[in-house]
Length: 353
Image (cartoon, rainbow, N blue to C red; front, side, top):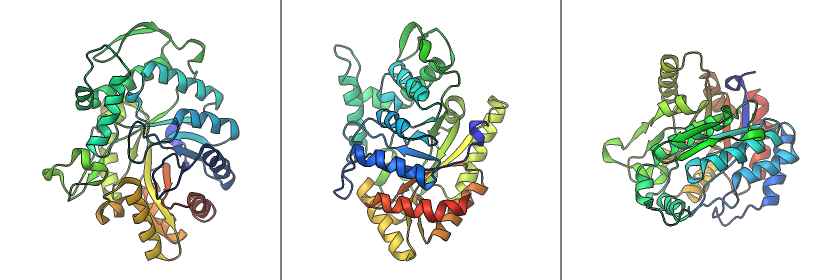
């Protein structure tokens, strides 16, 4: 079966500190992954938010997935969302190929350029530059050029997974006759790419790094051509069903024109809180989301949360399934992550099969 045809309902196992005072340790995450498999989830997602975010990733996401691979047998192992351009792409490609082999092909790399408050995101680029001493790399320039840096990083990794030996001389990376050797996978690991964000009417939230008055109140699809050129599918979030249709149509049309025959997967990212009391579920999810990302207005929350009784949650998710989504990244919108995971696994997933 092609990756684009895989059906995967996955749950995030929390790798973030700073959320309502809760800390999720390695043991918590590994136990949560084992329970997710037992509950019938198809995959688990691990957050990646390194180097100075308010809700900072506690542990290295590829390392966590390697440990989860050893504990599970069926789960797809996903990052959501990894920023590969904050790492050396040759080293990351080797690490990922190694874990891909350990897991017997269960890895899915979810990637993106990153989002959040500009001052916080810039710290990541400052740290990236600090790792390369005695060079003229400027963290401000890296931040300003992060789109090109990200694209080149994806190009390097995709080629390393597919080609035996090659040289590369780009804008940011230069090397000669590099190969992953025995670690190079027979089947390249699939990648999913985030693209698009809702810009709220007032400054704040995850789109604060790109807020402009002329974009306020709009969903911006972003550089969707990168999705087609450098990945195996689109991770959408913040979209209404109709906006998803519009974005997916643009991506499919570009793929048909530039890469005929290339099949792409569609993934959807959202927060979920299941409770028979609709008002309680919504309030709990919005409160959690504000702890997770800060400055989340109702208009953003309503685009990012799916809440209510299990039947209504399943109905909302099924709407996206009918529009072409075959992969879900469900994030539990509650400090009690495991309880929400159980509610989703026991009461929502059976309605989506």
